[in-house]
Length: 422
Image (cartoon, rainbow, N blue to C red; front, side, top):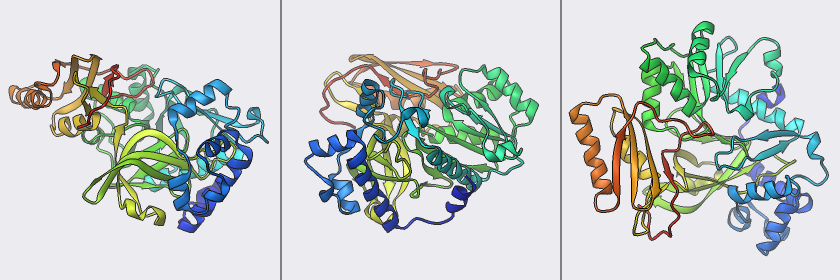
């Protein structure tokens, strides 16, 4: 792991990334039946993928739902290198944000590479060996063992998950004088809420790193108001590829030594490009991950410099399927609600729930319920909804997490054809 950590200081070249991807495609064609079948069904062979542009434009994409469904039906057979035995690999499972758990199998070597890279990103963000660390993780990703560094007493961490009582975690933070927190955003937010609502002084953190889901501007403001972190960073990643990008300042910087990405269904906004992200792991060979569509829409800068590794991610806009379906079949995207409701400095949290095509409920958690604030937020919601769909507003003390420990801001059980999206 130490060697992998040190290798992170070497910036990858576009040619190195291209050669690695071509090698992975060759490997998948020869040893991974799922991808060979995908290529054959698309009418292409190895001869058609000669450069990075060929890979981006010709290699078939796979949606996360398709990948998960195939895995469920075959128990991973066909996704893993046929020369390897799954029981000899390390299995990493997600908490199932789509409702279907996904498993990624890695060799010990691939797992060590990921550990080394994670440590490098944490240190780059500001983590130091003497910090008292709290890691907020999904239950399925709770550490089974300490890393090499932790066995020697440095970078030691306490792990918690969203099934544990908040009060116990807050008491643990106070008792052990935690000064670094990283992990799942929604649960970190619940911890911050507990400090705030119970009038308990929150610790001033040396470092705070939320991730695992979209972090909004209102999230960031609330974290700063509560924990006053000296250093702040965000991680964007997925079980399929591990860490994808880190946000140290205004943009997310992709980890091009470990991941390559491209966009589909793109829209241009001045010098920015919005699209659905397709990710490729440059590490996974035991179970390759090639052009998987995660279901996230992102906003990218300098997308025309993708092949030069010059593209950065400005924002993770939200899930592709975050839409409110109107009675006439039109849709309003979750991103619209983000952009509209995050404008208010008193907005702490919100969620839109649609159980029928004719009406929806907007749940709002606000910090100051003055008449002026209520008038503002109700006025803008009226402009969004009036004449389009019946709606009601409920002001609440808490908005609970979803069963997977995350919090979707828009839940719609309606499946109607799209005419256009706002």
